[in-house]
Length: 148
Ligand SMILES: [Zn+2]
Image (tube, rainbow, N blue to C red; front, side, top):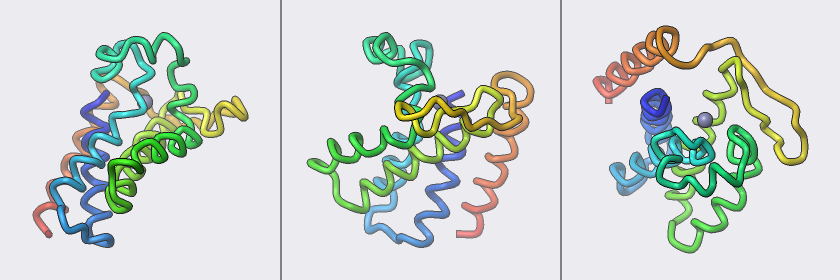
């Protein structure tokens, strides 16, 4: 669910800002949140994938875009328009999405297309379990914001 990815991305953003201290914190956070939604571009029914159906048709869901190698061409393309700190923000958001999907029972193929080896966890997506997980992340988000 994209809400869960946003909540986790927000948490990663809060932690990263503490260390990186970007000059524009709002932009830094927006880029992390965008990065955290980007991998689901390969999912025809995701919030983002519905608008880019062609990519979902060409690429397997949780295939290339859910592997860490996809970050390389992505950052290369974005390097023409973004600064180094902004690229770090996108990469962090993107990686946070992959790592959270890796915690689910469906898992991801981190080395796709080199290997179809799957990294899997025990979390179930959708409905009840993800709702509880999301609530937990949001509570941590709020506590961290409070302490800033
Ligand atoms: Zn995903």
